[in-house]
Image (cartoon, rainbow, N blue to C red; front, side, top):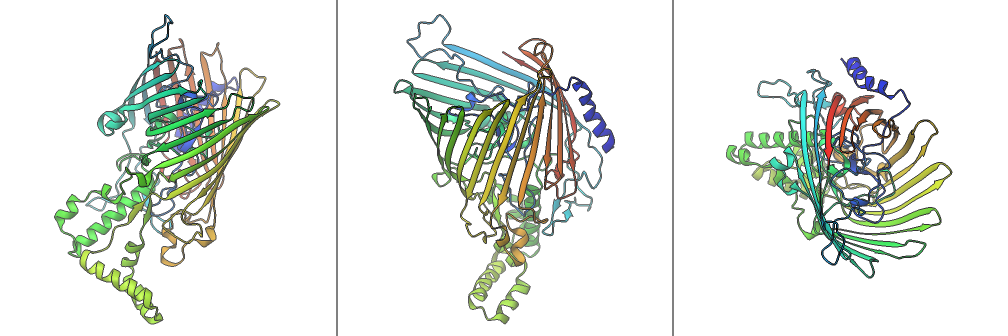
Length: 590
């Protein structure tokens, strides 16, 4: 069956006989964004390509599921897409007054799409079962009341309708933007995201100063659909990394000011503030795209609650009324606010930037100290008494008393504080468009010894794209990576495998190479493309071919697919290794 899936997906490659492949869909994970230099999402550049059918599969990203209850959101970004949901500043949105132009001050836009996705993976095999890892890294599986393994997958055939409506209104001194997003998810579960963006923007000091506020999306960094510096908005991973990047980004209430110096150096200073923390969003347990770390956390909590009920420490009524959302801290307050500064400029043909971000990781870490200790009191307490360590004995006796009164404690979830110091650059060298980003992520665990807080880390991105003199082919190559500092100081003893940075294979670098090849034929009506992602240390390979045909500028039909290969069960995408699919899409824009 695997060979059949490979052949079916790669058969799309036959369509690329002109050595053509089209652009990157910029909507992939944790920020393969476009080069949004000094404006909002609307200023993004479509150089890496975008999926002409919303809901397409042109993005990549990763969940780090190799540690208990910990979710690493610093793996590698996502392809940024300039599809509907972002507005180019060049679009005339009319005027709030004073505009004598005969054009209407109010403009409307729309994006209607329907994607039909067929998943090949339907086998009820151990490989396909979406199990989790225990603390040794081995696979475990959820079971039903009869002891049978629970199988996690969506229906084989899935239809994904989507509608977006935009209204823009602007003048010489101000502008307003409204984007409405209508999907099954926003209408059913996340009503607040029906409004995708709502922004009011004003221009001051002869347009040198721009101040804007509202429910917004912004992007930092010079990468092309890949970033290590983009921190303000969170991501919606409920449909993996398949939707366009901008569609997957969750807009956040924020205030933003941009001052641009009208000189040759084009110095621009940008400041951003959000009053609370937007969290990454994940699929539910019955979805094919739920990450293993979330399933591990859910399974652990269920086990603890069941044990507390059996021991009489929790009533059946309390267990039935337990809501897992209570484990998460309330992030809608100033304690979880975000702020940042970014300075960019140009020297000749060299674009540069430096930035500072103060905020939090968008995915929680689980503090299981009390949970693990209570589960091991029968061995820890006698050992402490034998050693004569008075402080340790007192700590364990306190936990023992707590256990006797209320049972085993549940893990405590927290969004670790993070500061990111970044530099970015882009230039042209001959036929090559070069770009780079580098980040130093500073957390509260500077020594690397706290198992419940992320260690400091480094992130980097380097890449180039170039046109070659064959048809209209463009080749785009980027390398994105990260390195966890002080990894030799990770927790020892019983807490080691629960450390949020722990990797069972001892891999503390995470490097990926992304290759995108695009072409444009028949006067831009036919656009083939292919995207390849290779995870160097973890042995992942993702292939995404796509063919887009636009008989008119408004109408686009796409045929695309995704194939995921993983070297072993410790590969980054192992949870989704059988989620190969083919997608047919149609999209109408006005």
